[in-house]
Length: 254
Image 1 (cartoon, rainbow, N blue to C red):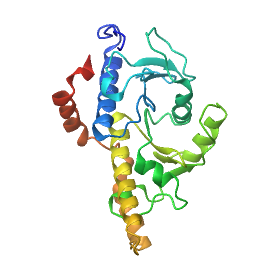
Image 2: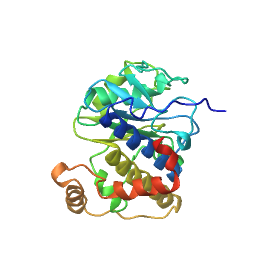
Image 3: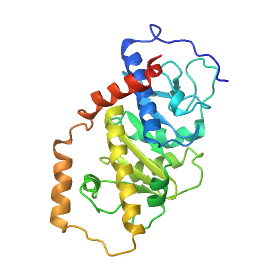
Image 4: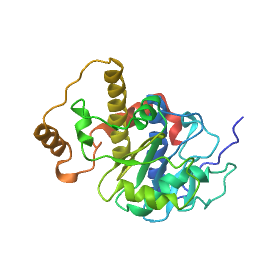
């Protein structure tokens, strides 16, 4: 059985408590979509008002079991900054910390090992512009070559360099998907569309028949439309998604 977790409501700042609720809700939404991998992988969120403190899941919880109070505060090297009956998968935070350290504009990072995401990560062609939704990532998605299980801190520099200064989506070759956003809403919004694009691509390729791609000027103009103004994404989706979590998974806010 899982060990009891003491509530942190009233014991952390209001801004941190809201961040905890948002992150716990994001974990539940990822589980709701079926993107989980048992107790593995992470969604991390920078603690508001800090540059080097982050909230992350306790090692040993399914995403369906994450609550605002069970989230653990850590530093950029994965060291726990508060007491918890659970540990943190420090090795798994290497990828996240690479993004958090290099991109102060991005505060939430989601990493998944879905079947479709892993399948596309193994293709030399990467993500193809096969449908309108995929065009939000056209020439705006990065790739990082597989180096084995990410346990070496030296890999962080290469991950950050591969993501670059402006992209918010990364395909870890032979591994999985990663999205990052200014908050949980944007990171989830990007992962939702990236995952759907991967699913679509694998179905198109499985048909084993010729497929079409729009002309270059259409691809680029559509990508510009999706990314116009560089405004945070997911703002319209998030209230409805939070309502869904409140209705179906209300324990997230404990």
